[in-house]
Image 1 (tube, rainbow, N blue to C red):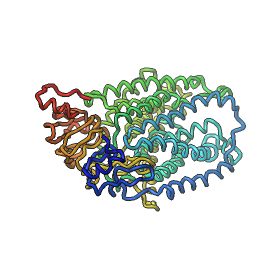
Image 2 (spheres, one colour; image 1 turned 180 degrees about the horizontal axis):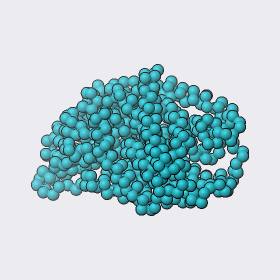
Image 3 (cartoon, one colour; image 1 turned 90 degrees about the vertical axis):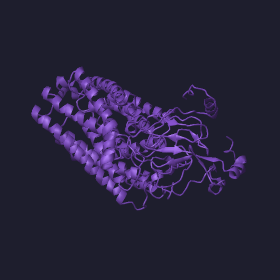
Image 4 (cartoon, rainbow, N blue to C red; image 1 turned 120 degrees about the vertical axis):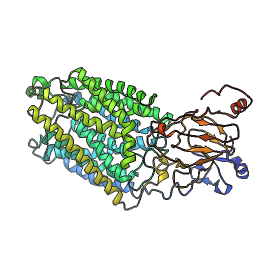
Length: 604
């Protein structure tokens, strides 16, 4: 217990005491220890070369890239961006600012907290949500203003100056673009370097602006909440980019022991879920109001569209919440926190396109129930299938939360348009149905193509030659100060030894194989066994983000006789393990049991 104090370094060197490296205990050889004072204090253990074969040169790549983008954008703002002086400022603040604030909270707080589930990557998840959203918004004001006001949008003939008119609705549109970028980020989270993430997000903006005008201007599709233009495009852009980024990587899917959450990071991620769930009606209805002047030209059937947006979205979210809990328990007989964090939001995504339509409360509830069920089943079965078959790594499961529910939302709007008043839709009923389907297909295709091109560019045109090595994946230690890279157990990274250790969970494995401390949340790959302080490589690995073992997921044949941990292959893909025997948690409990205590120790 005192081996971490510098005074006891000589004792540890002399008696080869176990050394703690970010929750991994191993019996280190004396020559493996580095006891020299470091820049930020003493280091107990020098990480092996396999953990960090190279250091990312953020000063030369990330800082240079950000400075280059700023050098281009700042002059453009000075020359082309002007306040929209022809609008009523008080009216805009009254109509839009509350909704704008809600959308900002969703993007910066909701998405940021939601992606902190990764136990070794929370810094980057929430901090880069902050940075990349700000970067995308700055660029999106230029791109969206250019396309909406001058090239393709409905106002292009109303503006006779080369300037971009900046108002609150344009800022809300820019925040929507940031939301699409954060959706895409969920696919490559933990696998891309900071510089790659910067350029992937930067390259998303112009295609997003073009797709948005294609959906709203060319097809005149119904998509007030962005099921198609925001969610579908962001999801398939991110998935395609993630596929190209991961081509030369190993352990980039759920089989990586760092690509999962812990008890506390999952709790923090639920805060993001609740923020998104509460503010989603504002996201869908932020631009659904009319000014006093616009009310003179609006059909009576359209006056209530913001009311419909709010009510339909809330009802749909309630349905997806209920469906997620029910389906999650039905899959594995236990609730999976990954399902609850994500699939409970699918109702808001699926209701986006049709949220301003008269579809009845029962219809909205049905959409939520279907979306929540499909999303939950996607997390449980489709994501592991795509990992096994085509090697598609989807860190946050955006295909299940945004891709498929977004397509469902576009289809709901297509079928709902058949029963709407002609004043609400922009084409004849059959034509509107066809344009809705065309908007979905073209958006999916645009997302895949643009994401693949962006992913290829950031991996092929890589002047610094930087990419994340296997131990650096899903680990903040590669890019953050005062955070060490957590070494992977032997068998995970091609031979780097973390011998004599039980991976994660706070359990401590000493030389005799006994365990000390709690064993909760321990993550083991399928087939992994730990016996007499030696961890064997897994015979087979089953994908699935959450592989968590409880204190009953291991057996301890007796004090000092070694530890054996086994994970049943059929159950591991569902995020649960099959226990062998109860595990004594302390030496005192082990001794009491050895003396004939028939009662198993209490589970911590």
